[in-house]
Structures are given as structure tokens and as C-alpha cells.
Image (cartoon, rainbow, N blue to C red; front, side, top):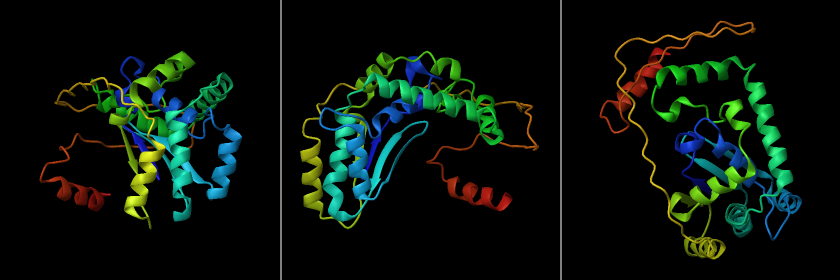
Length: 243
């Protein structure tokens, strides 16, 4: 059972560079709701096998639970409850805000992660893909619970989400479960977000960063073609051959 929301680091508008989608993911996965506490959610998840997690990318946030077919309804119920009825207690916000700070601090010593960030900043000049998904720490530290709750109400709406249920399941029964669990998820208007067009790269670019690590790392990158271009598969194969 997977629940996707079309929100990620490139869609954060006034919060660009703040990692608001990632922090919200931390708050929603396993969150307290009016019907159960975080501890009660953990107990149910353990009974389902405990195979659950969430992640945030540039353009999507995903929450998932993997379990046996007999637990389908409980899995969908948990996902629906977390996403449609979050309580946002202050202590949970303070805890997860601190967890993200520790993640940011660990990133500072991660040479691979720092190289990836440097590549994005160098490759993109206008497009928000230049910002790290987790955000920049000085901006993340300005986020308040009110910012997170406001962003949640803006983006976590039915027209911006996808529920994906896969496995040894009965289709009619599965649709009935999904409709029942999300019956109260009221539609709201989703704001239109227009991403800037990245200017064409016309000259080589180079960036360098020095760190106190026992490694020397080099990365070469090129702007490539759109996903619908007929040369996509040939170039994908070529990248494997060359590396």
C-alpha cells in the first residue's frame, strides 16, 4: 500500500530551500491522530510486519506499508488516518525538527552528498532542482509548526495525491476499502505551480569543494534530452557502456 503526494523540493514556492516537504513527511509518517497515538500506530505496524517507511524526492512524497493481503484494510486505514487526520502535536514537531537538524549536520561530513549538492547548484541556475531536498539548514531552522500545517493544507488534497494498492488482492474489495477509508477526505483547490524554464547551458561549468576527507572525487554531468525524446533509450544504454 503506497500513498503518493505530488509535493517535493521543487514545488515548495515561498519555502524553496527549506525542505518543508521533507520535514512534513517526518511528521506525517506514524503520526498521532484523533483516533490513535503514535505508540498505538507502532503497535499496529508491528502486528503487520513493521515493513513501512516514507521518503521525499524533488517532486513527490511517498508513504508505504508492505504486509500480507489479509492486512490490506488495516494498512490503508493507517495511511488514511495519518494523512487525512494528523494532530500535529507540538512535541512531535519539536522532536522531528531536531531530527532533521541532525540529518543536516551529518550531511556536512558526507562527501558523496556534498558532491551531489554541488552538482545540482552548478547544473541548475533557475530551476528549483538546484535546492537539496532536505533544504539548507539556515532556512530549515526558520520553519515553524504553523508553516508546516499551512503547507500541509495547501498540498495534501485529493487532486494532488495517488493511492497505489498492489498484490494478491480482490479488485472490487480493494476499491471498496479505499473508498471507505478516504470517504471524509474533502477536496480542496490545489494552487497552480509553474516551474521556471532552465536556460540552455552554452559554456562549460566547473565547481570545486574541499573537505577534510580521505578521498578525491570527480563527477562529469551533461544536460540531456526530454523523457519523450526517441534517443532516450540509446543514451540510457550508452551511459551504462561508458561507466
